[in-house]
Length: 491
Ligand code: BG6
Image 1: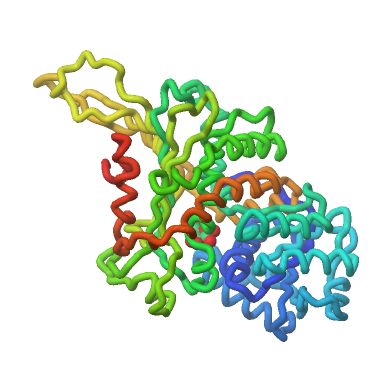
Image 2 (image 1 turned 135 degrees about the horizontal axis):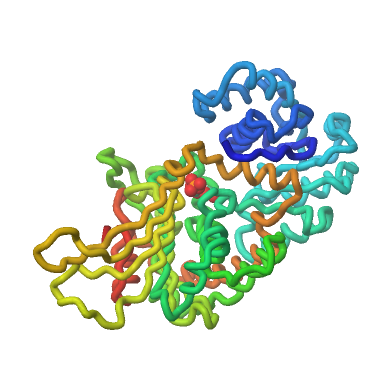
């Protein structure tokens, strides 16, 4: 069992309390932290939303959601009752400044840490924060947690950051990128900075290229309205994928202090070579899934999922080649690939080392494969270092690639907590290391925006790819043009 350090007493107000994120992710995360004794008996969760519910009716919804989203073996009636006793509900339209705020004011304790979690549409962040300030709810001990996406482009991100920043100082703003809360993503810091062996190899002299893949089998999941306006570049690349790239590419921070870590990530974002309009075609590929099959089951195409016959220029797949312009990463391309309705759910980072400069072995001794470090974020979290070894036995010298393998779940034999468990408790503690700072979010938009603009100016639509495939053929060409191959094509 992992060591649990209880957090201080807190009141967590969740705006958007009846929404999908709250019911599917936030309440289960808080339940687990309560069950494991990290959230103490005096902590409170206050749901706020427009629906006309009272405490009991909201608790019933919470129980239903918990039974659905917490593993059956992890839930028992006693703990559930004790947890629900911590849950309250306030009916409130957070965009209006009316007497309904009084009920929230009364529910909050002056001496406790206050976490205002905005699980609402990002267009409302400014207004909700302005109201929190105006009704006098923001204390020294208050923090605000914002879900992604922060904006739709650089200008809208700046506008949201300005509005939120007018009420909360930057150290009190916790912008969530839930990938940073994943155990294996945090493990990237341990891999690089708690071991001596890799850091010395982490350079252009030794590394040939890096691949980052975030593949999902799901399609729209009832989020067509949002997704069709956003697309995969905004939804996954601007945040999750670039954060992963930063953790791989950053220089060692001088400490684990939130700002020191974020300073280093920011330097990477600023070192990303801008993709100019004339580079968009050779360096990026966008696709949109059509009908196909996943795991032997037929699935419909994007437009059918959206429920329209109208063509859509929204991409559900992106592959791109990025360059980090620093001494360490000169001539080391970063290939990024992410999409919906791909053959499997898989997030992994592959660091491929350079090929042998010279071989003393006969040419036919092996199927040569350069060394690769494969960091598997999900599923089957772990790491594998692929190396050439001699096949056992007499009969000549034959070599094959073999893996040094760590499977985290097997090694530690414990449940992997959901990212939101870690992030919520960090927000209560006031530790912003795993949250995005304003300048990071804006630097990421600055890099992504020219790609979006170039795409929207082009007459062609995203290339179709059948659901259950690895995206349009252009994605394969993108890497094969450079004499390299996506990892799944090899294994
Ligand atoms: C979210 C995106 O941020 O991440 C979703 O909005 C995506 O579209 C999800 O499905 C993927 O997260 P995970 O943790 O399942 O890899």
